[in-house]
Image (tube, helix red, strand yellow):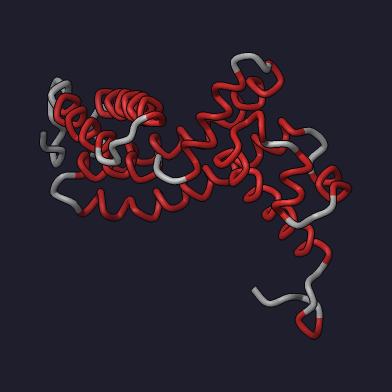
Length: 210
């Protein structure tokens, strides 16, 4: 969208939004590269190319900043997932598309950053409370997918439960792979899990093959 100020100059709101986005992106980068303990607010500010004062103005505490960063990236991933739903609704195997979508949305920095925060939250009650607020953003992707996959007259619970179980299984596989050296192991385990998960559906809804 074009700037509302003549000559192409950004408004104060646009500059503030851009700075917040730089801080959020820098926070995710630091979580992935240094872990939660090594993600300090001075390091984030330096990575974002902003002053410490500007960082404190937008986010007063580290917990606020790191949780906002994961929510920011989760929202981006959710938007991508929603755009991909057309693939599921036109596919002969919409469940297969949904499971592949789970895999895709757990790749890259989102999952690594989230896992860092889950572990840190075990001993940090302030961070844990903030994460409980942010988690529904990620889970909403699954609920949206389920709602679009099932016919309106069918009970969505079995498929919804399967996808939640699939997400739990996938996260376990990926966490275990943090110390692995085989770049294909996690994918092989996920494909094996998919085969087993499909067998758990008590009744296959129309258009959702095993």
